[in-house]
Amino acid sequence: MADILSSYDSQLIAAALLGAFHGINPAMGWLFAVFLAVQRNDTKVLFWAIFPIAAGQMLGDGAVIAVQTFARFHFPLHAVHIFISLFILLYGFYRLFRYYRHFKWSGGLKVGYGQLILWSFLASSTHGSGLLFAPFILSAEKVTDLIPLWIVHELGMLASMTVVALIVYRAGMVKFRKYIVNYELIWAILLITVGMILIVMGGDSSGGHMHVH
Image (cartoon, rainbow, N blue to C red; front, side, top):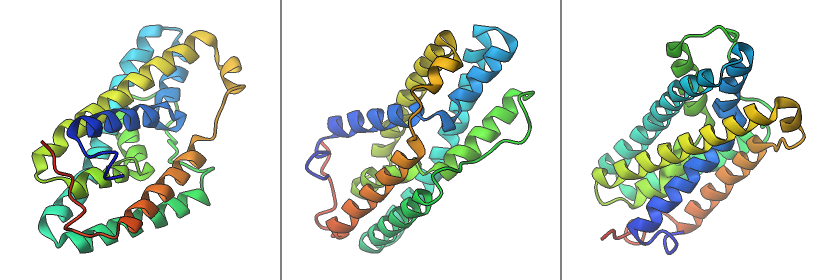
């Protein structure tokens, strides 16, 4: 993983692709936007709903990333590496056995933009996408290296959410159901894989840095 992400450009690409994959998952909110647009029979509603959902996602990811970043720069790197690696692995197994569940909103479809942000924040912070920033965080030389990565991740997520939501809205929910993929199961496996890779890397603080130029 360190070899693949050895340059800052490759890290930016990886962060954007990760964000795009994250955004494709219906559980992350774009399906909610589609429902609202269908209910009100207005394409503009879809776009107006996507942005607060993306804002909540950004805040949720940012909160998880901030906690990891604080630990990375305030505690011994080796200990932080081991702790985060084990946490990601165990959380991946937790989600593997509960992949059919995700954060549910009980407020119905009559929601305001503030409620959409709150729902999205809670969904994102419990989904684990911020945890997959661990390879970037553990290898960062300074905090400012992480800000562009976070931004391109969220932009990738926003782009994929918008495109997929628009396609599903135009094609219709009935056709979409034929192509449903269990992204929650895939996401759990991805968390487990990343956790195992980080554990194999061993938390060697001398070898865990990616030298960014």
